[in-house]
Length: 172
Image (cartoon, one colour):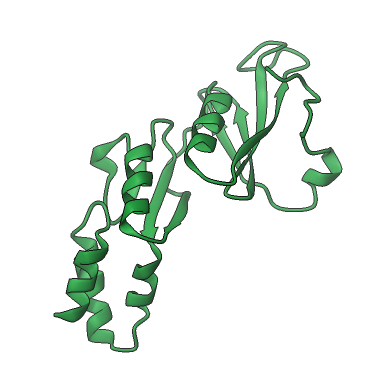
């Protein structure tokens, strides 16, 4: 495991040059970051910082934060304890070029079947994802508003988005 100043970790000044989403976990930030990095291209764990002292939800030497990159975007995972939980108020959209990509991400991330709706899944850590074929955006923006309405109505009936089904709705 990497230590507090792990190789590849961003410096404090680098971290302050952009907005970086910070995901709150109980104690599984490193596990979650490695899981996400295994799923998405252009992804890697950048650094793991351990606590320099005891803190409310852990002790000195425990993993405190994990810096990681998913599809080229920086994130931080924080082991903050059981005080807050991830919920659907924040989700991440995953643009998919085809049905195979939709299926692959769906299979990798969906862990709470009762949360599936309109392309949304919830993973085993409680984070919500929107697995969206890019074709959906074009269909919903079609100038033929009746066509866009049929596509939207079809989407609202789906759990995992089906590009062929959306295309059929557009042609009806």
